[in-house]
Length: 383
Image (cartoon, rainbow, N blue to C red):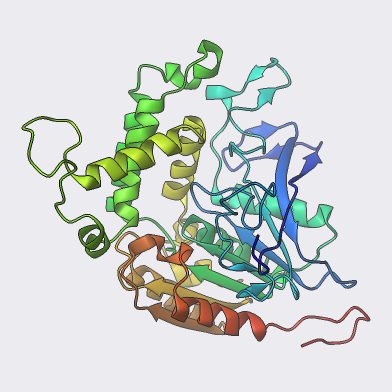
């Protein structure tokens, strides 16, 4: 295990036995959130950093669950002692969002009123719903205000929602590879992915748990489609090109090109660890996110309550959440005289660049985090 790892971590569970009304109007009688923490919360609870996960993410953002585990948390290159988000200085938190499939209450959880998994009866959730439950988790942990809230992609949308829903509870917002709303093309990609799941014979209207099956074929296809959009054409070309698996054409519809083998492997792997209903919920939450919608489609007006100092980061080769979308966020924040910085990182990896260890990107996050100030344990101003 590397010295710059947070080491062995143990997930925790927070139970909320209070009614929670979602944006849809449906009320859950209570719910659980699974979360992990890294570092030490100082006496003034002023050094907390919340990480918001993206579509396929979860609470396990750094470290290992066991000494024998070979793959660390999904953003381990960013979080840990001496890393850009330094756990020697910050107390870092990440939870599995409501509706998830890694321990938090979601479609695969047992409904206490029926004794069966929620399945199709689990309600749709929104980005704002997630942020409100995260605020409840912060209350549970005794955190009144986050030093920073950080997220990429769908996680970046949650950071934006934090900024306008709880402007007094967030000092810094790091919005990475995100957008204030999806384009029609992006909504189209999500719908095709959902249709692959919904049309799988094993889906059973979302209640496949009671049949002892999973719609693996549909989820596999959904992930294959999504994975194509996360990578740039240049990266796919340099990694696979038109290389053939067996050195020649076999005149069939099996796996012939290496890119086909790669995508099928990714799809198979994902379908064995993720829940199809959760995938449907997450993509719909992506579609619905549009803070300007309730403000006459005026994003500047939607951000009128934002006070957090903000860093917006985009990547040149990200065509799913393009730099243009990030610049729209920056413009709306500047219209409100928000202290905002913007960086456009030259990177070839496409949307997935926000998860990778690019030296310029990591240096940027490191420097920004080093300049975040918070109180010392004795209550005096800190660095």
